[in-house]
Length: 286
Ligand SMILES: Cc1cc2nc3c(=O)[nH]c(=O)nc-3n(C[C@H](O)[C@H](O)[C@H](O)COP(=O)(O)OP(=O)(O)OC[C@H]3O[C@@H](n4cnc5c(N)ncnc54)[C@H](O)[C@@H]3O)c2cc1C
Image (spheres, helix red, strand yellow):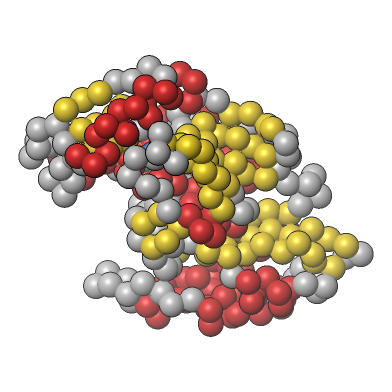
């Protein structure tokens, strides 16, 4: 099938983009970024936006830079930018480990980091990372100006976020991690490149051999990714080993309410979450 007819707009600046969104958002106008999620849904006519505001020509959105201890990722940055570490520390290494789980190489050369965050598929790897690290999302519009939204408030359910229709997600900020931070990622999907059934991000620092500043987030299992606070709490002041990791995984599966569908039952997803939380923490220790 071909997409339903639409009007195409090609702004060259953020200002023009915001003007177009202010004018057309109410008339079913949408941002077009990498098109790797939006175009297939249009081709199936599951989405029929009347206006597409294509941000691919907005060069000022294409940047990755460190500012005030945060890695700032502009809306033009493709997944493939993370194939090599974009910074020298644990955050750069985590992003490079995670990116290879996203779809396939051609999709990674078009799809954008911010597009994944805006689309908020429950099984998005970048959304899980954003939740784990308490990312900040920068939303801009003519009506509301600039809003900085914390990850815990941004992800609200399956493909549902705090972003308003006329807002551009112009930047995502990830906190740079201290050099001694241990970070790990694990996901399970049926075939390489498929959307994950579940995934986890784990992280901690060590103080006298005991864990502190613990982060555990689960993605893919529920409508939106989130930190597993009870599981994190359990690890404070304890050593990193198989026993403590399993205890955290057990706490995580008690805390989640997994999605349940004809392909993947809630029980199966829960058992995958248990394994992924353990593996993410093991990978963090490796
Ligand atoms: C075969 C296949 C496999 C895939 N597998 C995975 C996978 O394993 N993991 C994964 O995470 N993703 C996967 N994807 C999706 C891919 O990562 C997309 O790139 C991503 O979901 C959306 O990014 P995009 O830049 O392509 O956004 P688009 O498709 O252009 O847009 C998606 C939605 O977000 C909105 N949007 C995009 N950017 C902005 C912005 N800056 N501000 C406001 N709104 C915005 C659009 O209006 C639209 O509603 C897969 C895609 C395909 C086709």
